[in-house]
Length: 81
Image (cartoon, rainbow, N blue to C red; front, side):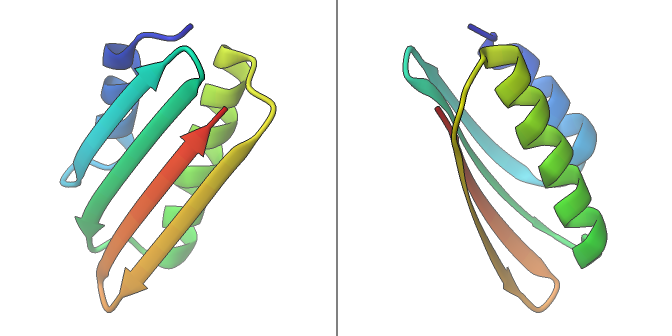
């Protein structure tokens, strides 16, 4: 299983000014990311890279991603299992 600190470092490098919450347990990884000012295309590319990378490292088969956007603000919930 991947370490929580490794995921936090990666998320912080991708989403510099965002607030993040990472939970890792035996069943998978849960992420919450909230921020402002990402271009929509860039946001989805970063999320795709992040989710596929974590899934490969953990051997996960499924992922749920919920993205909420209001103006320049965004919120993302990810569950990889």
